[in-house]
Image (cartoon, rainbow, N blue to C red; front, side):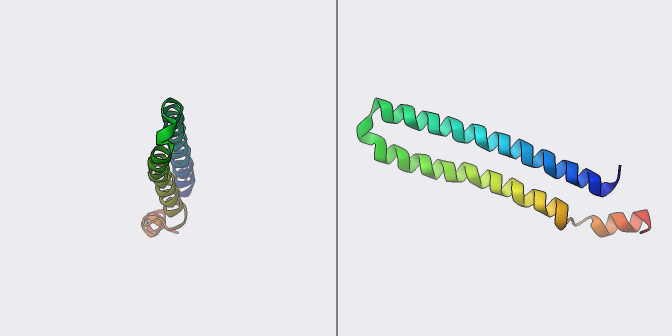
Length: 88
């Protein structure tokens, strides 16, 4: 298979794995926050603040995966080397 086709496959798998992991993490964080508020409604403000900060940190992982996938697809540092090796 061609180098650029492998790059597309790698970017697709990276996005799939990254999205799965962040979705799982966010779901668990929200579940725990809702359980915490249900047990102690008086602490809901503090729990929600901490949850939102945690969700932002989890979401940053998805953004990093997206950036790496875009680099693989559009700004691959090995493109020139591969084209030279292929004689194109």
